[in-house]
Length: 271
Ligand SMILES: Nc1ncnc2c1ncn2[C@@H]1O[C@H](COP(=O)(O)OP(=O)(O)OP(=O)(O)O)[C@@H](O)[C@H]1O
Image 1 (cartoon, rainbow, N blue to C red):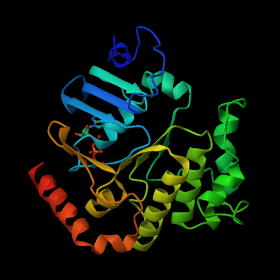
Image 2 (spheres, rainbow, N blue to C red; image 1 turned 60 degrees about the vertical axis):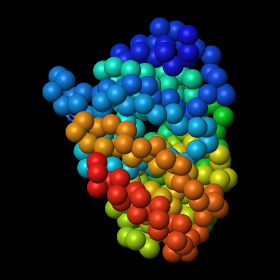
Image 3 (spheres, protein in one colour; image 1 turned 90 degrees about the vertical axis):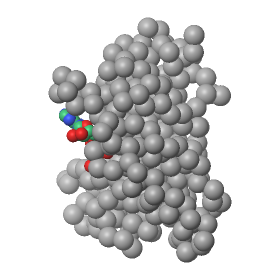
Image 4 (cartoon, rainbow, N blue to C red; image 1 turned 90 degrees about the horizontal axis):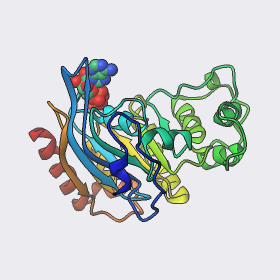
């Protein structure tokens, strides 16, 4: 029996399968997620396999279930049907083993703690012992060297989001789930962070799932784009973005990029 088949909808795995490194980072099979006693069908028969180390952007109209899919992977909502497999484990076991971290639109930093202390927080909350990254190195990685002692109120929105990304990486997760992390930022800051997050992805090898409402952001960041359609939430297309992995903001002016965004816009209009 495949590992994924053991992770049942109720979140009670029949057994704990051995992790299979050759398998995808995340496998979602025939998943339904419902709310309000089954009256709201947020996801219907969703299947997708995310390769190890991939950068996948998730795009789709409002209410199509982008956040719900991320939450099902993160063990925050149960699947009513189907299988969710995260690094060869059930979402619950993957959460216990800190195989993923979550970055939300709001940085949600503790205002009384410095940038460095915020990055250290997951290590204090979850107890020590596990392999973890050096919080100072991570602040350098996200471009905040020298701001270790700044309080969140002394940082810009973009800087606070950089702290949140460093905090998410401190437990060395295999997977980073980013739910519209730059949605509240101005365009210039967002562009800069787009380049930064690609660099961080290349340097850490982390699998990234990234929800966005922006077609150019989805095309620029994604090795793959997962397009969801609404009512009910379902997979419209899982497509490879045929652009080189080393991307610069100026690449958005190329014919290839414009053709990809035009295709995505057409798909989105059909959803
Ligand atoms: N806790 C909940 N209780 C009831 N319904 C919910 C709940 N969470 C989500 N939904 C419903 O599930 C559907 C999918 O919501 P979800 O937030 O996943 O969509 P989304 O694609 O992320 O939306 P947006 O782009 O607007 O952020 C929507 O119809 C939403 O109203």
